[in-house]
Image (cartoon, rainbow, N blue to C red; front, top):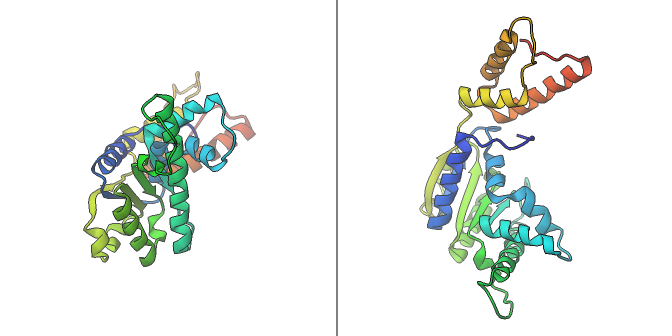
Length: 254
């Protein structure tokens, strides 16, 4: 969701899946309906909201950057989203560029804690252990072949995030498909988890004549119509908060 990240059961399952892919240095597929939270979980796992601006805006460093070096060292993951019509050369160049920048940050952390000494070398890419490619459905035959070649050359974990059916599409590429070690279905939120999320986003008013029955009924209605889709929940609650603010309505009703 666009607000504070909420750790759900599906996110914990994604962490276990990503750790397995990273440890075994294999290729994994994560698939699920649009809006269930795949991208948010991938970015969260890679700490990409923190790491990406740091490695993109390359420049003079300060003592405070040691925390970011430590974060990069902890996740050791590149999160990449290809453009809509990815050009093969640009695709690999951008991935390699992010890998190099992240590797330099990890190398700096290793030096800060004394595990690496001596002259700096150009082999910092070795520190990166996982590549997460979001919107993998955008990759055509050439792009998928390049990902396979990248995996063979670097022997690092690779996760392809896509829509349902991507696993069947990849089955048509035997050289890539034979390297896939794990497949993970990212499912919508359960009603109980969704109720907890909504309670966090839409707290009930302190005093209501009906004892909060209307609020609880409204929450149940949202659970039913959104069917556990994170993105729909976020859009709907944003509109609810806007309408409540504009009209000075403290309570939520069906």
